[in-house]
Amino acid sequence: MSEYRKLIIAVVILISIINQSALPGWSIPDSEAKNPATSQANTFDGEKLPRTIILDPHELVKMKQAIMKQNDSIAQDFLKTIITEADSVLLKRPISVTEKTEFPPNGTKHDYFALASYEWPNPNTPNGLPYVSRDGQMNPETLLIKDRVYLEEMVDRVMILAIASYFTYNPKYALKAQELLRVWFLDDDTYMEPSLKYGDFERGKGRLNPSGIMGAHHLAHLVDAIGMLELSPTWSGGMQVGLEQWFSKYLDWLLNSDLAKREGQRKNNHGTFYAVQVSAIAFFLNKPDFTKELLKSTMNDLSYAPLDDVSKLIGVKINPDGTQPFEIRRANSLHYHIWNLYGLALLARIGDQVGVDLWNYKIHGTGIRKALDFILPYALGIQTWPYSQIKRVNNEDLSFLQGIVCQAILHYDSQSYMRVYTSLDTEDLPLNFQDTICNVHIKYIDTVLKN
Image (cartoon, rainbow, N blue to C red; front, side):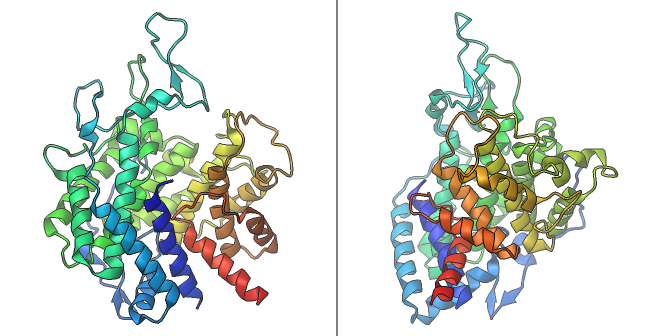
């Protein structure tokens, strides 16, 4: 995990400490507001709220106020660290999808291009085509095309600059962030097309694969960064308009292209993270009602749900016994049980911001909590996983699990989750900036209780 992502984690950690002291057929109504930068004039404790959906805007305001008081050593140490890391990003050159030396079949360097991770040369043909699938086994050839890695790096860098800009008011951070965003999204020579049609390319198969949408799940977090940057006095109106236009086109592609519709119809983790992107980006485009309705549509009963909604139903993704039927046949099925549940937890966190409670939703005796309770004894090694898992559960898996358990402590009244969390609380786990606010929240509570 990059240093930038680790720094971002620190943001939400300190915020938490201070707090304690569409899917096929979907369309967006034209009546909803068009200008996200000016539509939310809400304030909290005299500060304008940043337009974030995964990061809690109220917690960001509290952190800023602690820094401004200058008498909180934790906040001041954090500020020094964030400035150091943001200053290092100032030295980084912009990166772009146009830097690749191998282009997608249409020959366009502006299209995001990545090879399918689990596709390998065919041993039974002279030219190795068509590639064959080996589920759970990543082909190192995929690392030769950098678009997927560069997208994650760009998001990390913009996020750390956005945090520094928000907390320091220093214009240099917002200006640098705008440079990175302009090169990736807007400049004529280097922009990325607002689609992912070549995002998971399978050599020799003569078809497009919708799975590439998963590779851009970081974009759901990028819109949070933009929501903080909007408050900088140096934020460019042209940049705002340009990014709105890009994300509007991308959201339109997600909702209306045949390829993306196929991804949205998937009942497994791909469909889940598709919904995470759509709901977060819709919120960025000032469509909170659309986000809310999307999340509410996951709560229907299969017996009366519209056909287009069936794939996203929580009652379809999770069995009454807590297993996840569309992850269970994977070569690394425990990993995918954790990963899909993590995506559902992200949707639940987005729901917290728009008044939809997915944490406590149950249908036919199942829901997010049931899925968590099922996987815990296997993920912790207490019981042997009865399905395929060709690789050991690694620290990244456990880090995602820790994030889910942390949220469970806050949303469910059960001491058992605190005991699980304590068993997972180790420095060996990689940090995840979207979970750290919760992680430190729980650690702080535990410390206070012990004292």
